[in-house]
Length: 433
Picture 1 (cartoon, rainbow, N blue to C red):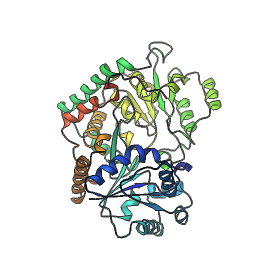
Picture 2 (picture 1 turned 180 degrees about the vertical axis):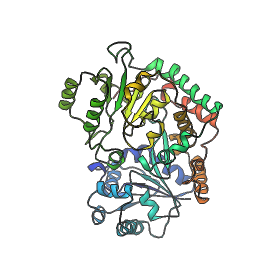
Picture 3 (picture 1 turned 30 degrees about the horizontal axis):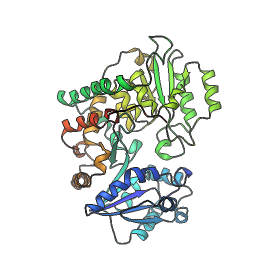
Picture 4 (picture 1 turned 120 degrees about the horizontal axis):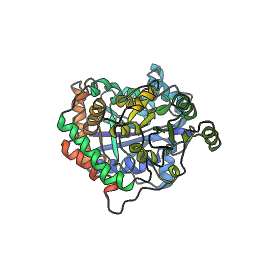
């Protein structure tokens, strides 16, 4: 099989080597495994990433091809403008043709059967090689400790173009069986007893001023890239947080947490201090800085999640919390409400599992999000790609949500979601920053 791994060729987020973590910690082992298994693997990237590879002397098993940065600026004015046009599908025919020319100049007559794209909107690669299976790589529903690391390959892209967004209604109405629903319920109980009751560094009592008080979690993200900005009307995380504060009841505690990759969208400390004086119900605990991935630990303790596009919304649905989405993307598939208009009434209701959200979670965990270890297993991954290719060839992959094949035996999938949690390893302690 001919497989192309494609990292974004621009200097992403204006930071040289920004995609190095994904290459080193995720793609390298997959590339080597596939190459050793006999597949033809290529990697295409930008000049900054090529330089980063040389400086770190990263050993890649495959040939590497570099797209000249100067040539990209002849097509688009910036990486932001390029990704906006590619995501919105508003590139001109000339721009699409020019980018394809750059790619073909590098790869020559070699044509991939599969393209795994990171950060670049996958629609670009579909135009370059329409016969290939082009998939957007991203982290899955779970990817931060104490959960296992899951990945996903999406045939559509990200945000409102993603699989879960495109098939949101079908997934919500899919009506999983009692046996399938039981698997999710059992996993939740196991997580609660074996992980969160034992290791959670936070407590409900430490979050509220009095027992009956409601508390919501707002996981902030970062700005400056289309993969976030195209999800909503907000142009900064400050705009988002202010809108939340003006609309949430004043006696409801609002916790905010920071994304580990916050850069341009980060709210300065001086502004944070001002906001917490202005809004007494807005809270940020110093312990959030001490522990890595605080949102994951806080989710089971709060009453609701308010999010634009964070996967923490999926966690909220898993823990039977109210999920309020204020953007347009894949997490809307598990939303209690897609606005904050009636948030006070929803928060007054007791926690209960949302059946439609459960339908979505089960489908994604059994057909869409797979273990990082499987991504490194050439036999498993090649078999998975063959099934996806077969589904695409009969026109089902992008037209029917059942065209996404099962990842394997369903009991084994859900067993692994517990077994593969880092918190199940001997000597586990919550990770510090």
